Image (cartoon, rainbow, N blue to C red; front, side, top):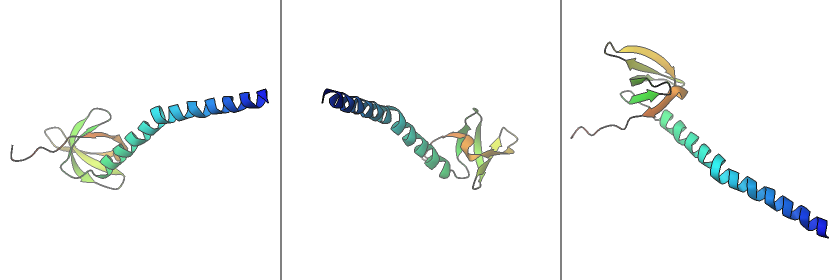
Length: 96
């Protein structure tokens, strides 16, 4: 009976370790990925974005899998994959 109890305790210990890893590492990462996906799906023309490479630009056009960004003073239009968008700047109120 002693070895059976040791096996059960060992199994309980591994389940506890997995639970800790899930709640501290896996779950927050999935939540962050979900927020990024929602942010990228909500892109609209006129939004100011920063790519994961650090390029700051305005969105000119949004397609299903890519966006066209306007860069620099010449307003050069360059296509980017949606996954390359890192952040969207919050829009400022026009009343300010």
